[in-house]
Figure 1 (cartoon, rainbow, N blue to C red):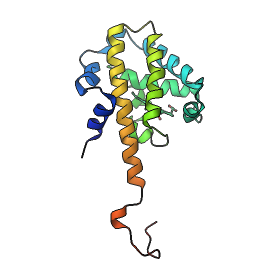
Figure 2: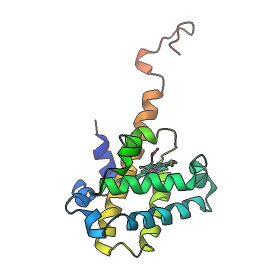
Figure 3: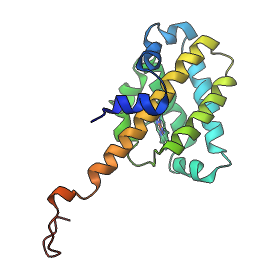
Figure 4: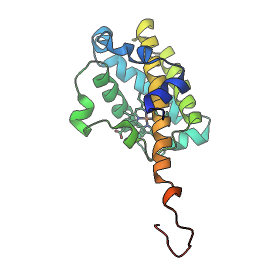
Length: 172
Ligand code: HEM
């Protein structure tokens, strides 16, 4: 059976070596601190919350935009070599578990990545080489979450191996 990482690579088209090229250098230091991450997440969520595609915008309807921005940039900062701001405030990122309430489908991943590409393109405080590395990481992670979402949903589906033929015997 394919691992989540293998599925993420296959579906995203991003090899693990590219996805984790963010770890070859310290991007937090390269970018000179926290501000570029705040710029990026603000830019990203401004697009998401104004998306013409209602089905995508509505996925974020239960979160305040300011909170979503902070959650995201604190995670990016800690993942890309900066202080562990996210974990100090919220604990382990546990990305698959935290995305469990949301429909993280292939289509949603592509829409998320579309906004992130546009946000990166218009964030001047990030240099082109760092943008390329970040986008590889985002693309791979997005499809890692799609794979995790599918696994979670399968785990919740009734298990056919254990199903009884008798309607009277149910494990619901
Ligand atoms: C694949 C499509 C994705 C969808 C549909 C999606 C959706 C969401 C939604 C609805 C939230 C809640 C907003 C909030 O209150 O913070 C969220 C949170 C978050 N997402 Fe995503 N996301 C996706 C991809 C990603 C990717 C690729 C990353 C990382 C590279 C990521 C990292 C996070 C983080 C760190 C949080 C905050 C979690 C928390 O503290 O509860 N997401 N996402």
